[in-house]
Image (tube, rainbow, N blue to C red; front, side, top):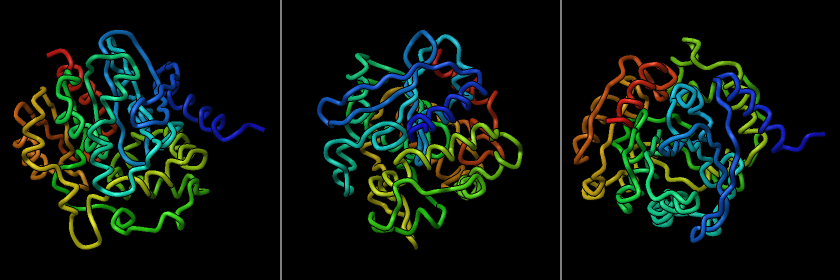
Length: 307
């Protein structure tokens, strides 16, 4: 009988193949933070590191990677998600989470023996990306932010993200069905992508496998900052203006107008605090605009990477 990691990899490989992506798996150690991270690597050329959001891995960008020729794409399983381990010291409070975020991407690049890279982030991945870029601006060539970026002003979130739960109450690997995962993803701002047929059955089965066969659900529910509470946003999670002012590399934001977490007002405010940012609003797109508009997203990303 196949073990959990094998079952997960089977679903992941099927999803990647459905998007025309062939990737090799590499596992590297983080020297100072500790633990190992797993990445999927595809293509040849300048390096692009993809940093996913909550309850996800770098494989979520497969459709975009399949449209991105001429670059070496590194799709990251963040620590504690997918098949990456937790760091030696789990970041259980906000000060530790901030310190962890400040160093994460620089350590990943060190482990890959890369001096610099382009970085593509979405949602919670943006919280790590912009903190890392402020702390280590010399390690970034450019940043492309797809959807609402963690650290921007949040206006809404699913109830499940507002309600804290003790770690001991949360299963590491809930036995979720396709219907349950579909409902979860819709509630997280991707209803339009489902209703418009932009999320394939292979992608949905990969999402189910991620939550059933890895510790992603339990770890992401426990060790990440909550941007909003039951009644109001958590201001301490938001990136302060002086931090964003340190992100001097070129930034392009590809942001859905209907993003649940914050639409045009949040996007314009966030872009306005960055010294070198451009903003592209995507009409009627939600929290995964590269799924809503895959060709437009690929063109925007390629244009920014080559500008």
